[in-house]
Image (tube, rainbow, N blue to C red):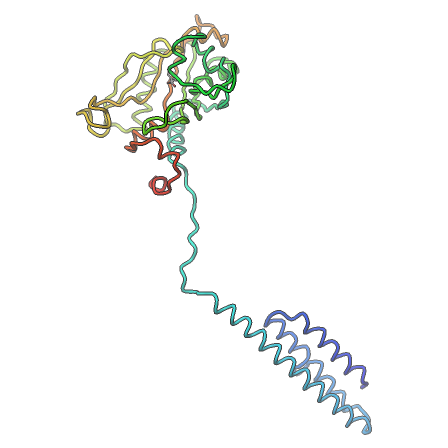
Length: 337
Ligand code: PHE
């Protein structure tokens, strides 16, 4: 055995302890140097091979090496132990866990999902158009002639002379009919914009679902049948309905569909403004003039269209009396659905 071995072990130990960070690594050091098969034990083992002259010196060096290593090891270990205890005492296991909020669908999305499911079941597919529209699609091709007073029915946000934020989803009808030949049977949901004073009843942005069915021999009776089926599936069986004559430039004849008030069942109350009836949508037979704009033959095809506000639909179904709650992002409201 030579002094070099002792030096090597000492140097190796000094180097190893520099990187020790936790109790596991401390244990590795103990096994490597101080255990029964460790490096120190090996050095002591080899002592018996040394000559009688060397033995006392070597024994002395080995003893002091062992003392040095043991001392350093013990202080390192207690340092690491107290550090990890401090860390552990900071963790309060009795604290309740952090509640992770799982998002849910907004009531408007839920309502639209439900409307889509019902109309898909009735054979409709879904088509979407852009919110920035041309004056042509939003008005002209829908038979709102230039300077026609009907344009004032909807207060428009114009981008410039030719483009605007769509005021209804009806321009998507024009897009569908320009792209597809009959038969078409689609619903078209999306955001619409109107420059109106914000109040409990109106907002500058809201959502509509448009419906369109064009084929040979489509009749007003089919329009009624489809909308009544929808209303029964969506609002339940407990109401009467009626179709009132109305006016839209792009449908002729036009109608509005009412159902009896869900609150007073037709008796008259605040929600239905004492009429007993709630208007749920506008509809009508596609005006032949519109067919001319999209190159459909008005002699060959007929069709119906309808449109409803999604906020309004949800307000009626859930008895909500202020449209602004949809956009306030108040969790106390949103979490109820
Ligand atoms: N676009 C009409 C509105 O916004 C609703 C409507 C759609 C009426 C389709 C008839 C047919 O008021």
